[in-house]
Length: 307
Image (cartoon, rainbow, N blue to C red; front, side, top):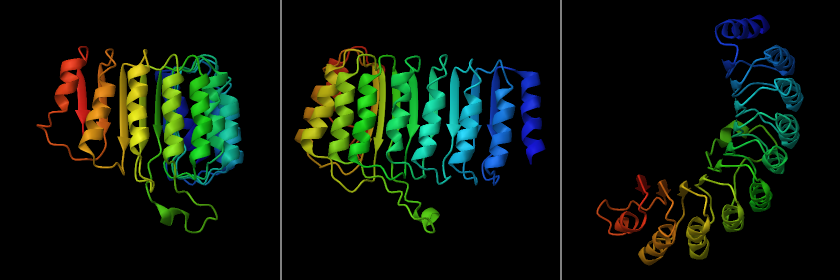
């Protein structure tokens, strides 16, 4: 298996030394094999884009440390997509990733899929990447089915607020409900980001001086989003002078036509919006008159979706 790993890298480097795409899900890779993989990647001195899928393997935080340390040696990396989902990873794994990725001073785009793991407090360490490394402009963070609570979402929100370079951010806190995957593990993986966490994310959207695109997926949580928080989200959209595009997916929303109209009115005050998607799972009718609010008020709007 080790020879297969290194051979694929050699083949790709001979074709294009700036890009490496490796797909190794369900390969039972352990720490030793991940160390070999990392060392081989570190030899790719001209690498600018790394796309690495390691979904559902058998490595631990030690393997993540080896991999992160070696990736850090590729100083020219501009774009990283790393899928570490379904690997029982803990907070220390998140710390290792943060410490290494924050050192890549050419990094602009970072996609981390950490879904279905055991990360909680570690998300604040991931958030620190965009604080410590101001070159990162786009962060896509998938945290579905991790034991994340409101106060941990608050810490992540603080990092977003403090970042001076971030232009686009995607945060996915969906509850996938693959409980059987963790039935023989001691930690729980349920996401529970409620109104307090949602409010802190709204505040980061208001306070950010650089965000142009914002996507938040917060679905299948037990706590119902209250009316006040939903309106505050609309106000945050209207007040952010940089924001030109957003997506919001929420479930457990109170069915209140007056509230939804107020939300639409607040969002439509942002005259710079080019596109947005608002999915509140309310099954809105195509002929809903509230849609006309955006057509009438948002002059630059090219595309919008309401659900």
